[in-house]
Image 1 (cartoon, helix red, strand yellow):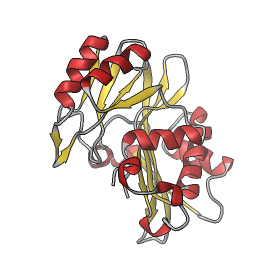
Image 2: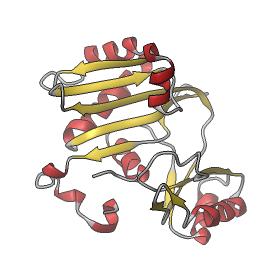
Image 3: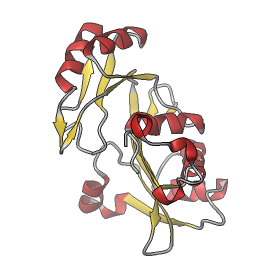
Image 4: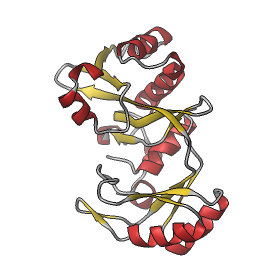
Length: 225
């Protein structure tokens, strides 16, 4: 079961991964009010369970609450790869100094987990891997050992990531394990101009077979089923 971006971000925040303040709304009028609460200038993002939102026009900057209302009106109802946009997330923008890619995925073929990371975030990781294979590191993770401090440092070194992403790598692994996830991805994970490590986007796929353990997942509107 895939989560919406805003749900992934809520999970990240609960495990100590920094995310910008944001609100989710379902009408243009609500977008205007939310933008005002968030400081005026916001990023408006379609909440659909598919990639390619930016290329489809589903991610736009709005300079003020009036622009946020107009932008939300344009995005709500938009069809993105067969997914109709019924909600948008408004997030405070951040000044980005560097962008990274990090993810954990269950490697069924190898019978283990993989950490996939790159110092070239903000782009589709498949495109980066195709153009520059050496720019994407794939590191097996022993499920019994998990992502210890040493393992996180090894992942960061393999992908040429700065050492200050190590706490975030460890926190994202906790999301993977504690939430019975098949995929936890952040693209981009950024260093802001003031040196903070922040997740600007998030994708989480949960294991349907573990619902008996994760009763809070529920069904219906909360998780978008």
